[in-house]
Structure formats: C-alpha cells, structure tokens
Image (cartoon, rainbow, N blue to C red; front, side, top):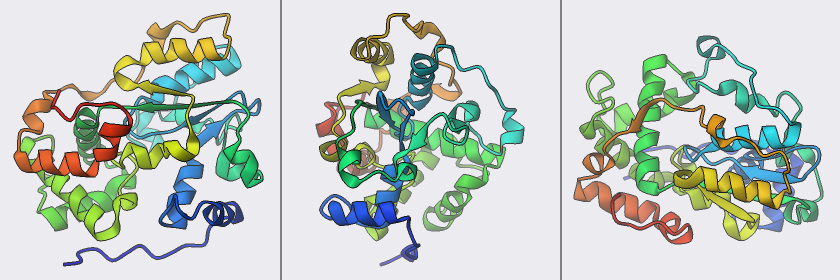
Length: 286
C-alpha cells in the first residue's frame, strides 16, 4: 500500500538538468542530482572539495579544512536559539553564504570540469549502526528545540508509525519506530527520498562518480586529518585537539541496546547494504 504521495517535481537550475543528462544511469531524479551538487563544497583555490555527509564528521572536517585554507581556526559563532537551527556549530555551515566556499551547483562549470575536478576530493563516512542511532537522537533533539527543518519528518513519523513525541523520544521503542519509518519511505518513494541525515552514504558520496581521493572514517578522524594535510603539503599542522567541537547528548550511547531487535537489524542491513560493503564496515553490531 502506498502511504506517501511522491514529491512534486520542481524546476531545477540548468546545471542540474545538464548533469542529469550527462549521468542518467547514476540518478533517479533531478532532485537527487541537485542534492548531490549542493552538498559538494570547495574554496576558490579549488585545492580540495568535500562531500558533506549527514552525521559523519562534517563539523570536524570543516574545522580542519577552514584552518588549512585560511590559516586560522574558525571562531565565529551564532547563538543557537537565534539561528533557528538545532546544530550547535551552525555558524560553521555558513561558509557558502559567506562567500568562502561554493557548492558545485553554484559554480556553473561545464560538466566535464565538475567530474574532472583539479584538486583533492574528500569524504567522510561512519559505521552505519552508530550513524543511524545518532540520526535518531538528532531528530529527537529537533523536537526538543522546535527545529522547523524536521517538522515534516516528525509529522510523518507520527502518522505512519504512531510515534508519540511525548513518550517515544530517545527511547528504544521510538528508535524501532524510526527505523520502520525509514523502511516505509525507502519502499514508497525510493532510498533517495530519505533525509540527508539518514540517507545511505553511498547515495551521498556516489563514489563511482565523485571518486574521493581520501575517505575518512568518523571513528578515526585524527588519521583523516593527517592524511589530508599530507596530501595538501600543509607545513603548519592543524592541532587536531581543537577540531572536535560538535559534542551533544547521544554520544556514548549503547548502540547494541538500540539495534537489538531482529527486525531493526534486517532493515538496517538491507537499506545500508552498500554502505557496509563500499566503506568496509562489518555488518556485526559494534
């Protein structure tokens, strides 16, 4: 039974339409192309580009890349209550609006130049088990602070899985309903319709197309920092001790407790099968 109406197509920038035409086998829709191009950022120097991947070390990576590119740590701040966004490091994600980074969708380059990027292509990934649990806590936090970005997701979760936002937040029962919800959306609308924070990472990065030179693991970000600085010949090394600024409730939770249900395990292994295989993570629960 279809439980969700498909999203209505929207007009996209010309670069999205052209990129879809150049890679019809890689994407199911222009919406997926638009997200892909929007989540790849690079500086004017084009020494590097980074593929933003929800719940997978973006804050650490952006802190690192900002300091490499501009020679100083990122210290600008925005009061979280005033930002309208639940992310405590929301200011760091405004580098595009500040004109210091650009997304590929804004560059308007010929398609060939997007695919043959001259600099270093970077990405980060995370163990699918811990990432999906972290995404659940992030969604619950959005309810607590009233972040409007996730309101449609919270409403649909309420309706389709009888998720009680007064009783199910941050609970194992609520997490199991959340995984059922992911399964419903993936079945009804396709995996590409999932929110970026729990979209399969292979659909974020599209490694056959993006071809990252370095893929960092969230579980070993300090190693990623060293590899990136080696590749970019950074002489004045960035102290990794100040890169981990994003620490919120939900860190250090018992992942095994939340994924103990055999149904949950089946859904996660099925929907994130390519993430396990592509990025070398074991399907065993950590």
